[in-house]
Image (tube, rainbow, N blue to C red; front, side):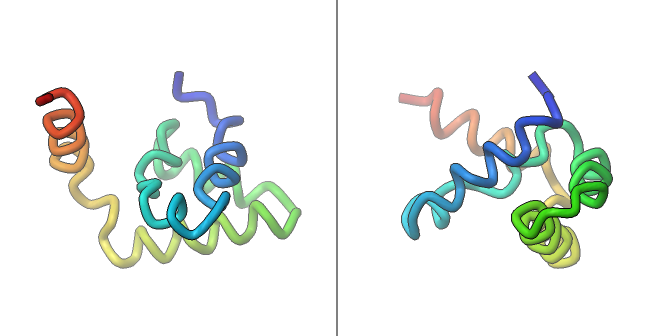
Amino acid sequence: MKDINDVNLLWAAKNIDFDTYCAFDIQLIIGAGLENTIAYLSEKNDDYSQKALEYILSCKESGDFDDMVSWYDWKFDYFNGW
């Protein structure tokens, strides 16, 4: 859990196809922490990691990570409320 090495696998999963890209929340990729994820991807020199980093930074700038507690609570309630 919270393994920073999962970032590239999660990014790959998000990019499988258009539907998955839309449905796979970016918040799931930063399970090891936003700043840890940014630092990890910043150290990578491959294009794939750089694309993930650019996307995460744009999401950070737009506020997608500002209220992670509410995001998590909504997801938890939605998927456990059945």
